Length: 118
Image (cartoon, rainbow, N blue to C red; front, side, top):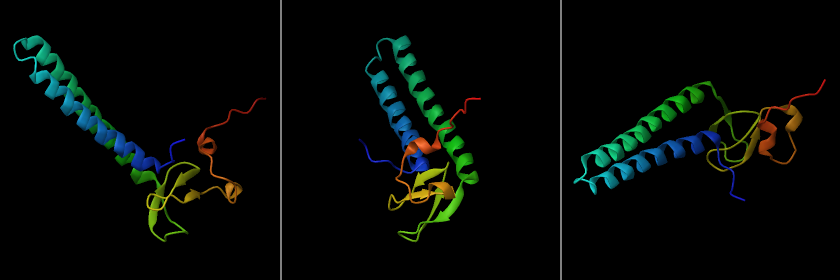
């Protein structure tokens, strides 16, 4: 199982990957210079990936402004927490804002909304 990372950092890494993927797609389009239509399709797809990255960066920026900033008890640095449980962005210490989860093992399932049956 992959080690869990801070949510904000994971989303920012995804947005950065979209930029590189978009550039690679556009670079592949250069190999089709003889067929302008195919080249334009690759350029357009690459541009869509870069625009998608911009949208993701804007979205995580708005989420980041609403995130609660806490001081990590392990390393003492400030980090932002999204949801009920998250990891410290610096030392990967499990953090929670829910007093009922303190002392329990870290599980990302705590962030999922549970539908209660009536």
